[in-house]
Image (cartoon, rainbow, N blue to C red; front, top):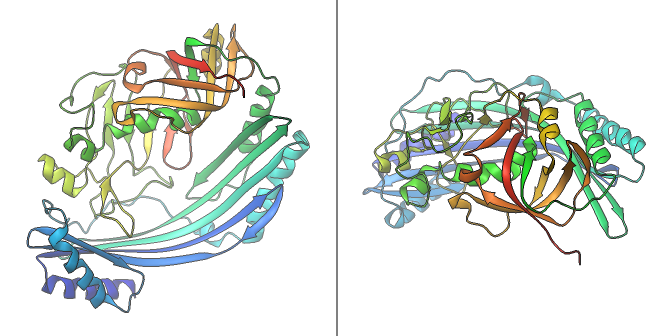
Length: 441
């Protein structure tokens, strides 16, 4: 049904434009939500829609709908927006053949809701036995999404992706003190063993039993994988966005091929990683996905482009287009991998005389993200004194600049860990991070 509808839409649109592209998505989501230690909501949500992009008189027109009976109205709306749309510099992809990427597992689609409920409740019960004053919320969800992309140049791609995720969040409130702990996993395959999640949260509870003063000034900080994802990656990756580079807003403009970061630091986008929820065989314009080095041993290696920004830059698309039904494509990453180092996590902690471990952040604060700055409240972090964790810190803010801090890395963890379904990174041990403690209200 989808193929026929898309084919008919393209035929009609091609008659009234120079080029046309249809993006169709069908999504089924089944979340199980837990609140206050018990199941609160079980539901099934289905949605589908189609977006049409046309090139008319050298400009891009765009429209979308979930009403498949009114393709004429969809085309009319796209034509009406074209005179006011951006100048078309792109040419649609003609690819029809793609290397397979494993992103679908039938077990995920067939997993029973009863098993999902049991999985979440068992994890909560284990944590409650460990700490009876812990109040747990959780989500266990599965989804199946089918994407179809076709255009008037003959380009065509379709694939189906399954995603399973489980996340558990715990809160302990004592007088004016609030402790937040959490962990989870996401994969295209079912995650049926929650032991790693439970043990991670138990460790967070153990480290948080004592509240201690935060260090102050320029101190060494170990960013756990969640800490790396929460504070360092956003300002860093914004500089690799091809749109920001074209606008001159990225600090990496004109810096391709330069060694700007520590030579031990490498980072790449790998949308072909098997069973990672961020993976895909092609981007949202039908351009084949491929591994793309962004930082190669400290050297700035490439930027992220979709078709439009690549054409504007005189480059080729890197297969990095993302889009929603209600928006034009934009360049972005899919599955970010940070290269592993040669140091054990425990040895990083042992090396610190007076410093901090950053686990989770609350917001990014007021900072120049495009310039690489970060300024964030520590939601969960631990004081390290003489090589051991002594307790949890409160009312603490960290700040710095990723380009400065990543020039001189103390150490990179020997192992890497998944954070959600689109980041795999080791812990990073960085020196001279600015740490400040706020006065309690």
